[in-house]
Length: 310
Image (cartoon, rainbow, N blue to C red; front, side, top):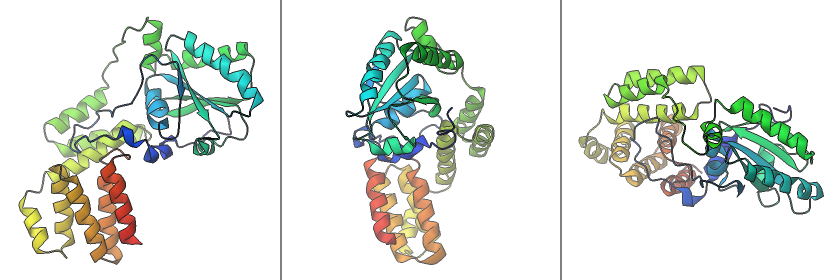
């Protein structure tokens, strides 16, 4: 990867701005490790990507396919030379990789994310992270060589490459025994072992988003399993009991009364100060992590929390 991008790009920064149309209402206690929908459009070789669709069409898609991001603008002369070449090569790839075109004038945050100094800039994304990049309108033979070397390096890591080369036939991936172990522990209610298993994955792979999301789910499920309906009555009777409010919110979220749980903690933030207020805020932000960042309920609760704090 180029020195200009290496270690400087956090693609998760765009997730919080994901398009509202991609909202997911999945229950928070779903089995950990299950991936969220990727919004992919099967068969598409060239995609016009915006800030709102970047998470689904680039980051999540790149977990299976190589995604080549073309950062361009209408006024850019070299872009008009390079883009048609990339589009043609993507169409000829049979699905081994896809081209994601980003108009930097319409989507400046994406350009800022990559620290783009000039256009055209082309960035290869695999496994949710940038892996290589170049700037300028390279000759077609050099582009072919660049993409070929990426496909060779990533063939055993991205199943979409092998599927495309196999004529579109799905290539079954072996199950990761680490996740199998963690999910089995979760299924039998052994939350401590499930948490330890996911933590071991993260210790080895700190950027593993699947394990991160699963760990959040496991910790919530462990907490929620310790409370029952009576905690809500206790919280109603003792509005200044912070422990009761936190436990009641967990119960409500686990029972799919998500708005009730969020509203309870926001009201508690308004009533508290100092360390207690910070404790409630952190608990609420932790509950947000159970959901897709574009979920309407999370978006509204974040606004309400900001109002309560400031």
